Image (tube, rainbow, N blue to C red; front, side, top):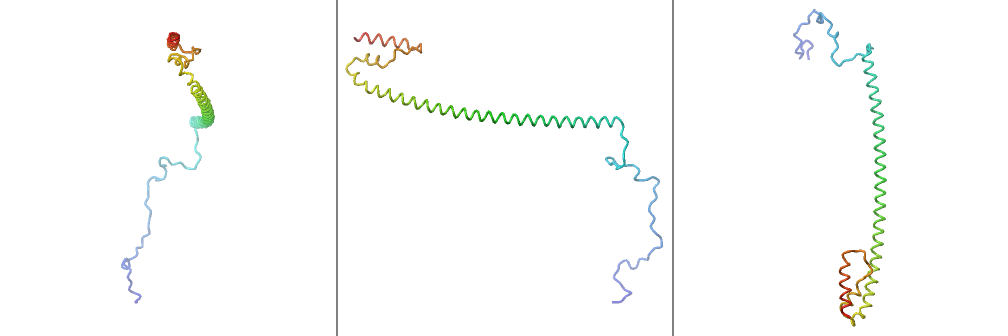
Length: 162
């Protein structure tokens, strides 16, 4: 390798004796600040700006208070809903327990009535048919108005058959 020859593509360019000089501007390009730019320097605040800042701070404080109140109301409402749900669950449980007891007592009562009817069946054979029917009807129960006519007809038939 020889020292005079090189593979440098810029080797044939002669260095110039002129030095670099920056461009000269008539005005300072950084004098005007771009929009949205704030410097760290203190800015004089006018009384209107101060009032706006105070109003905004007051609004923020009121909003925080309002949010706290709303959150408190929401929590209270949720606890009331949960209490009502618990009460409804207990009421439903009690209702079904009472209903089951009533069904059992009704079932027992129906079984005893049917046994009595079976026991009295033998006595029906020797009487007339209207006497059988009249013996099955409870004439003391007058709680419904629509049964009064039917009961009177049954009694009349019973007395005719004698």
